[in-house]
Amino acid sequence: MRKKILSELAKTNTRLVAVSKTKPISQIQEMYDEGQRVFGENRVQELVEKHEALPKDIQWHLIGHLQTNKVKYIAPFVSLIHSIDSWKLLAEVNKQAAKNERVIDILLQFHVAEESSKFGLDLEEAKSILTNDTFSTFKNIRIVGVMGMATFTSDNQQVRKEFQVLNSIFKTLKNEHFEKDDSFKEISMGMSGDYKIACEEGSTMVRIGSLLFGNR
Image (cartoon, rainbow, N blue to C red):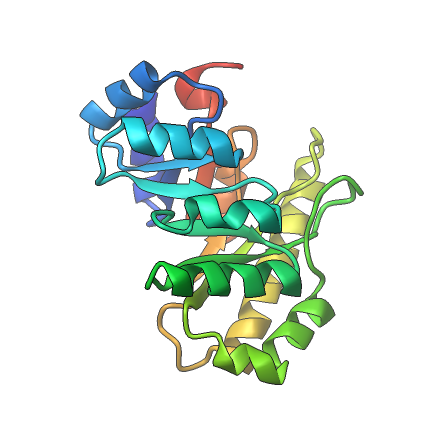
């Protein structure tokens, strides 16, 4: 299945984040041996344990909701944090990255779904963060794009519309705040059930778990 998905993604230059949450070390190692290097976890403790147990050239992505008091545990090694949804969290990641003498790549998470349970910023909140005078002093984080989740629904048109909203937010931020920043290029959207639509709507990375590892 991984090869089939990679073949599909190659047509749109979209990268695969293999979502390995709740999966045992052995299954992740097996996929690593097949060539996969980017894995996503949504719980900090599980991410730390797997980082310690598995090869060190794995790029670990934190894709779940992140509490500020947990940032310190992943700051030494995390490759990308998808879920920055507040000023407080952004500041804490910068602080912990500085302690580890790192620059941590992050995505701003936006709420584009109808489901109120989803986390995320709106466009005005993001602009408020980016225009805050203190933001320019944050030297240990690098905002490389945006992330969002569509509503869990069988209505593909609704899903498509929500992905289009996220793409529009990305373009607005690119034009107004990151025009000369080549690293601001990522749109993380699409999961096992909707990744094909996400690719059609401009996703640069998809977060796929159950199609790769089987249902949890």
